[in-house]
Image 1 (cartoon, helix red, strand yellow):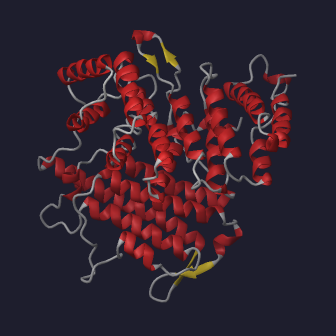
Image 2 (cartoon, rainbow, N blue to C red):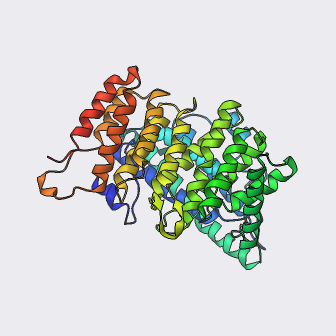
Image 3 (tube, helix red, strand yellow):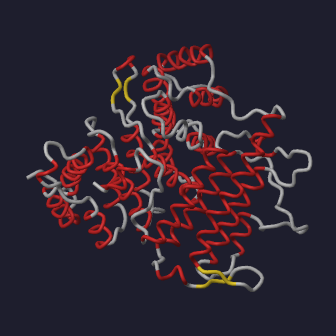
Length: 465
């Protein structure tokens, strides 16, 4: 496996996207790093904290988050030497209002505002995919008749985020000191017990919930979605969501609300980076809601392209940053954690979408490869097959260029030499098992016969001699 990827598990470092050229990838990694810091900082802020403006203050945290999204979007077009289009202005508003100040923003949640930042960041990534290292010296229009190099422009986006991070951190602190609370902590035991009793009764009766109770029940279920008790978490909460979404109980706006909550920092992002704690159950089972929502969208479309791309980027982030890779946790009777498998399930459903073009599909394949090679354990609870199912869907439900596929396969590396005995690392074993499963799956698709053979050969080369 790649030594730098292995090192990133236990040391502070940038995660450089191997789909980008080396210099472009390093610059982009700086932006990605700063955005993730921002997501951790602002993800738990309430709408009241985001709107808070201390005496003498000029901008709220909400205004600054919107400003970061708009500024990065301007650079998306500048880097292509394109004018800022009217549709972007209609979607995000102007950079400044008529008085030269940041436009007012209020009543927006952290998930919405950070989702905008992520959606714009994805557009920048697509531009960076088309850049060579030589392009970094190219000059593009800037402000007031000046020009800037592409290299400076990408750097500036990351530095701009770092600059406003400090301001948002100060505003968050000031809001807390003024008595404005952040997002509420997870609910107490009495509420949990009441929810468990209510869900047991609904499932015993065989009936669907009454419409007037649906919102209250869904909110409580999301609050306890990562409960350590597998009966409440797996059978009652996830099982009920699966049944009710499949039965069409939720309207489009309710599904959208479920999605936005599942994607926020208190759910898919809750405690990300921790290992061996119960926060993994919150992340993992929040992730498992996304395939249900995407399946409902395929039945009757309601997600916008922007919403799909926010989900896409969040799932990739979670797959990259997850450090708790336990499968089945027998200690304390906690049951399935399975964060890698659940992220693979979400990735597979994303791969079914027509919105996933060649660049998105390559990103999904790369995320799978990185997950396999950076794991701190050999996957033994079918994670390799779930990831193979995701890769199968990505490859068969859309276009991936043959050269991109070949380059991706090549990046799995070679088997270590004899000096690496007696053990060559978890990443090599995970990669070989994954490729063997993907080979079998692709044999079911006549159009993928050539790729299946290439995968078989690559897997055989990962065997110790």
